[in-house]
Length: 205
Ligand SMILES: [Fe+2]
Image (cartoon, rainbow, N blue to C red):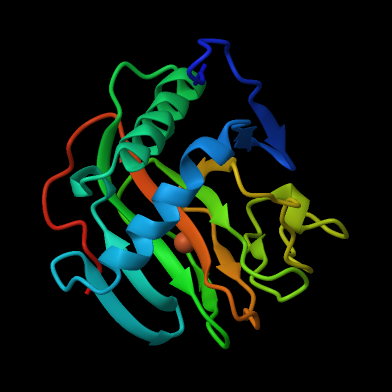
């Protein structure tokens, strides 16, 4: 189980489907400020960042493991710990990791992730309240998306999330982010993790 500095195991629960796992860290006051500052600073650094036209958020800041930031090392270790403990794997090899920054008008169309077995998303800052930016699953392979008839995806669904929640799901699960309308940046972090190194380039074109 992933643990905080206290060493106590954290509760990991499924949400909506046995393959979707959620845990929550109680110590976000200790490191979120540093982590948010680092994401917004590195967003200006072309070595780490690619900018988009808003269809997958405004910016992605890649390679969490290379950020010179203790808070980033902490959450990176927690993501890998959730993978190894919950999936009973000996190794957690990060194929690609990044932060996503959403500003007003940004959204993300339904998609799945490349290559890896598992994807993880950490909710760092949800931005302004009641401003959209909902993370939702849209996959007919998930029963939770097919409440009226098996295999017929009728409505997107997702958990209520807060800053400090880390969620893991099979990387092939289709998901999306609804349009965000707030003024404060909405920031999430993501990892694609497998139990072995994968050949080829993990960065999308
Ligand atoms: Fe995604």
